[in-house]
Length: 241
Image (cartoon, rainbow, N blue to C red; front, top):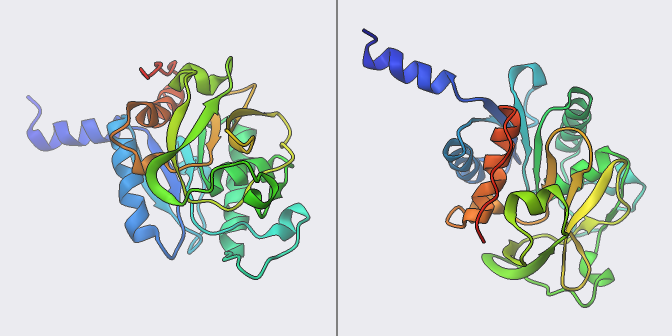
């Protein structure tokens, strides 16, 4: 008969390993929220920063987290004085997304993570998104006070439903030109892109908000469930509105 330690080890090892990239500045307070969401979805999160090299062979899924602005040089933009950038993190995450695409590894991008997915696939960003989309509600809060409209017929709609969704917002940049193979999965009421996804291949979804802070919302938890389900080769279940 297996002892409690053996049972605990089996339960832990049965959970797929999901890498979560974070900022070196804020990792200590951000990663625990991701780890809890991934755990509730059936996975086990491991923290990756640019402090040392990481290899996709060590994990089964990937979350590109939020935080620092992406340096515009890597997509042909110009640096603005207010940007806080981490070139080492940019290089690491771009390499990871490109590697995940090559491996058809499931990926969830959060805020800057959605932007990095777009850049890694050849897209560009608006550095001053609200300067372009002047009709978009400029919210900066971890509370769900911004409305986004889900594009019908997308994978995102199949995961979270097609009704409008209340989310938080902490970003100043947003997707401009779409990367290769991506399509828009959600916009805000002013037309700004709020989610992108790969139309083909396994799960790759980037959302402009921070679902890790909305753990009490079933539609937000559904994003992490869909990631873990894709890792396990299962179909993600649609969350109720």
